Each structure stands twice: as C-alpha cells, then as structure tokens.
Amino acid sequence: MKLPIYMDNHATTQVDPRVFKAMHPYLTNIFGNSASRNHSFGWEAEEATEKARKQVADLIGATSKEIVFTSGATESDNLALKGVAEMYAEKGNHVITAATEHKAILDACKRLEKEGLRVTYLPVQTNGLIDLDQLRAAITDKTILISIMYANNEIGVLQPVAEIGKIAKERGVLFHTDGTQAAGKIPVNVTQDNIDLMSISAHKMYGPKGVGALYVRRRNPRVQLTAQMDGGGHERGMRSGTLNVPGIVGLGEACAIAKAEMPEESKRLAYLQDKLKDRLLASLDEVYINGTQEHRLPNNLNISFAYVEGESLLMGINDVAVSSGSACTSATLEPSYVLKALGAGDDLAHSSIRFGLGRFNTDEEVDYVAEKVIDVVKKLRELSPLYEMFKEGIDMSKVQWAAH
Amino acid sequence: MAYSDKVLDHYNHPRNVGSFDKSDPNVGTGMVGAPECGDVMKLQVKVNPETGVIEDAKFKTFGCGSAIASSSLATEWLRGRTVDEALAIKNTDIVNELSLPPVKIHCSVLAEDAIKAAIGDYKKKSSATTAGAQSVNA
Image 1 (cartoon, rainbow over the protein chains, first blue to last red):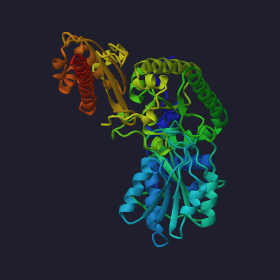
Image 2: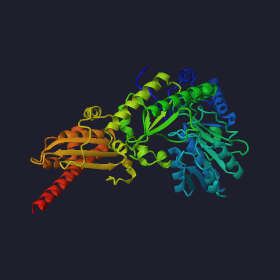
Image 3: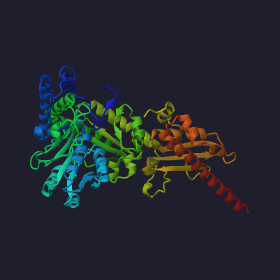
Image 4: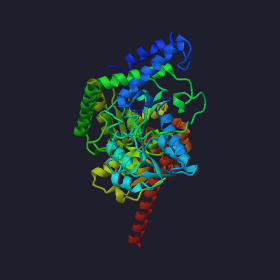
C-alpha cells in the first residue's frame, strides 16, 4: 500500500490509464482542428470527437446531437442557466433551485437575480432531499426552469430526479440537473427521467480536467439556448471555441469505461463504503452520517465526528486525502453551507469529514483509513472540552457560550 | 495549508492536557469560544494562594491544530508565573512563537481570552473567599 492515500474522489479523480492511452495520439500526431472541413487532419479530429460524442450520449441515454462539449461542469451549469434564462425571457422570469446546489449553480443564479430574474431556493429536509410538494408549490406560470442536482458533491445524496422530471414535464417547465457526481457512478437516463439539460464533467469520472458536456434535449421538447460564448459557432452555435479534441476523446473514453464497468464497480464501491462506515460506527460513539443513507452515491460517506473539529482531524490523518466541512478548511471561514442546510447545526458541520471512494481505492486502504480515523478521533476527544461535557451529561445547548 | 513545526509539535504532543476540579478554590477556569464557531478552549490554572504563583495549568480544546497549539503553549507559559505576570501574555506573543498565519490569529486571541478568563475566575473566587473569611472574622 502506498501513502498518501487519495480518498477525495468528489473533488477530482485520477485519470484512468486507459483514458490516457486513448488521449495520447490526440496530444501528439493527430492534432487537427475538428472544424477544419477540407483536409484529413480535420477529418481525423472530427471523427474522434464524434466518436466521443456518441460515447457520452450512450452513457446517459441521449443521442449524439444532444451533446454540447464544454470546459467542464461549471461552464455547463452556467450555459444551462443563463442560456435558458435569456432564451426564454419572454416566457417567464422564474427559476427554481435548491439551497444545497453547487456554487456553479448558486452563483449563476445570483448573477441572474441581479439581472432581474426571480429565483426560489428550495430548502432541503434533514436527509438532504428536497420536498416534492414544496417544489410543486413553488412553480408559477412564470417558471421557466427547475435546476436540481442529481447527486450532491458533499453528502452524496441523490435527489428524486425522476419525480422532479415528471413534475417539470407536467407543468411545462424545463428541467436541468447538475449530473457531475452522478454520471458514470450510477445509471442515469435522461429519457426515462425527463431531463432536459444535464451537466457532466470528465475529471469526476477518471477523465481529464478542463472538459465536460451539457446535454441539451432536442425533441419533446426541443430545448433552445442563447449562447454565452460568441465566436465561430461551434457545437451547433451553442458553444463557440475550437474543440478540445484530446480532452473530448478522454471524456468519451471515460464514459465508455464507466458504462461498461458500472455494475461491478458500483457494487465494489458500495462494499467499501459499508465497510468504512461499519468500522467507524462500531468503534466510535457520537458519529453522525450526513444525508440519507437510502438514496446515496455508492462512493460517498459524509460523517460528523461530534466534539472533534474537522481540520484538527485532517491534520491527524495527514497521509489520507479527504475533505472537511469545517470552516477552518474553507476560504470563507464559514462551515459547509450544505451541512448547515440540513439543519444539523454548525457544530456538526465543523466536525464533518467527506470520504470519497474511487476506482483505485483498495480494501487495504479502507482498513488503514478506518484505523487511523478511529485513533485520531479518540485522541482528539481526550483533548476536547465538549466531549468531556458530553460525558458529564451536560446539555450543551443550554450552555452560555462566549461566542466570538 | 502548511503548519509550522511548533504547531505540529504541540498538536502531536500536546502539553498539560486535562482538567482540575472546578470547585477547588485555588483553581481558576476559563472557557471561551463556541461549538458553532468551531473552537472552544478550556484553560485552568491552579494557584498557590500564599505566593500568587500558578503552580499548574491544564487545557482542553475543541478546534483546529493552531487552536490546540495555542492553548497547549499557553499552559506551558502559565506555569511558574504569578497571576499578574500571566495577564501580561499577549496573543501576539503566541502568534510569534508558533508562527501562526494571519488566518489563524483568532486562535491566539482565543488563547489570550482563555488566560484572562481563567485568571479572572480565580481572582473572583479568591476575593470571595477572602471577603467570606473577613466577614466570619468580624
């Protein structure tokens, strides 16, 4: 086993060697511009991007013509929201999203609000899922778009996408989902789920960074977007810019591998996830799993170790790469807004660790990480005045804290 | 973020971890911070009532590595000082000793607050005891 161990696969993933192998020729000999229509260099490049387009479409139950290549999920999210808002401005000016969305959605919404759009941010329940009745109630005749993520990047919960798609279709509202964490990890089908737009990213599924796609439905209904990047009119006018051929080849290959190996891989990841969870719960008290355990990615475990601060825990497991919702690990010095949205209290947000298992994690690594986390949590609880108070039976919600 | 060697040393080998009996008249307890802010420090001093010298100090901290290091260092510095000397410890002394980055300065402020709170608690208790003793004598 090699240290350090990477267990932060929601942040990014290692490029699969097979993906790299597929990309390699397009970083060396095959360098044409896929928009060059009159020579073989361009044709070869175009053939590669069209193959990749099919591979992406096949993973999500779409057709090739519905795939728009972008620089990644942030761009896809921005294009979906801003492109729809601009294109459908005459139809309405209201968008519905959720409090636990990725910043690429929330901040794009904030921008649109400044430009006069109205945005409803649905709260989530303590299990991290939106309430479908609240969604139904939020739709007005001015609503043009619902944007709810498929799988949450922090807590891994899966929103009821099929039900949301159904509601959106019934009410004649477009449905965008940020599928960054879901695509390639769990079966996703845009047709079955009535998804009109979906963002995906290569580097979250063992492909390269800097490339992603936006699925844009072409039929029933035909979704139109106002381009947010002006230029040569690439990608059927929706996203100008010379195609990132090697990146797109990598995305395509990553999608093909994910599709072929998903049944086996998701089973293996779920086993590792259960093993990690069971070990931690068996050895430690006051451990809380954030988000529903029923509807969840097979590779995510977000746990709060009460009375232990997240950054100090990360410091103790410094040969294991994971993330924390603690304020001390964020640039803003605010604890995770996702965990706060679950209503668990800021103290549990400060105590949270996100384990993101991936294709290259092994049984042995999970054993090592579990042991290490257990040791460090025990050590830090020895140091924790809160754990001492908990053991003395003091109700900490009644303590007058000298907040600073 | 890279931690200084001294922060790492205090984190890996925290000094004077533990608790004294809060009801002991010679013990001063300071607890500062709040769980929802991500750090809580409990600092205790045991004072020799004859000499006013802090004979022992203990801490427990919920917080990041720099908060743990700041309070661990504080207990080292408190031992052997008089109560009044202890009050002279400034957060900037802690920042310099541990080479804390700007984003961690609040940890040192919290440690200074904890020292002041512990000493304040001791002083309050001892004046109460003295006052009590006087009233009995009168």
